[in-house]
Figure 1 (cartoon, helix red, strand yellow):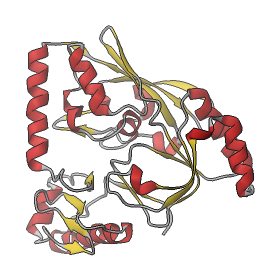
Figure 2 (cartoon, helix red, strand yellow):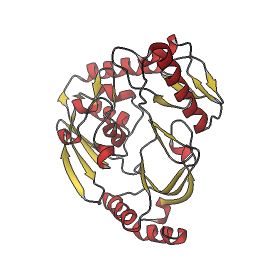
Figure 3 (cartoon, rainbow, N blue to C red):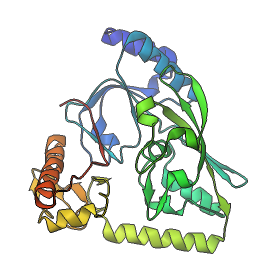
Figure 4 (cartoon, rainbow, N blue to C red):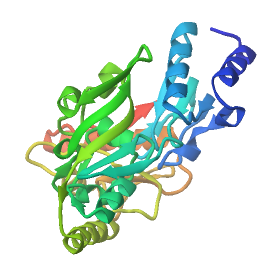
Length: 304
């Protein structure tokens, strides 16, 4: 491992000092408000800087982690070693005819709003998904019957070696809440969505309706990772959890939401250990009661 002071000096040669942090609390970058610190936290502002950091960490053998906007993620209390990259500064969105082109760090909610402004239909389902564009591709995010694979045309990514690739949507193996992006360790830089001309009033009406459903049914008043579990075939995760008598169950500061049993909220300064422990408890009880395994939708990373 390269000495600590050497890593910082090397990173400064690759990007501006203000884009580099040391021992940064990652709970500030997750929707759960959980997690320890990152050894190094970088926020590149160009595609070239992303490539250079990836190449550098490969060359010197430093652990590298890409962090989206933390909406579907739990970071453990021990934090993350090595270099953590966040693409929040790569957040431009623009339209070209019926296409919406969005950088990885842009919010998928803002991307759907850009589509609305251009009177384009096809991204309405994303109006309430609290993730970045990169994160949405990573897990083929979806809601209310729509998902990214329905409208994604192509993506620009960087591979493990730092090479820039332009891929078609079919190249990403998008399926229910999954893609090949994590397996291939791609870093999404940009996505192109191919939409259809629509009626602005109708598009807005759909988005308003979906926003209302989200606000009335989901526990947005507390920090959470969103929907914790994938929908098991033939069941609804929230209903299974509710029927198991788990709604309201607490472990430390973490609680199975009283508003929607498919959510676990950070109600009172929970630790990641408590939050993860409650997830495992829910899985165990539901499996014992209904013989159904609840598969996590949320990712868990970091050190104990």
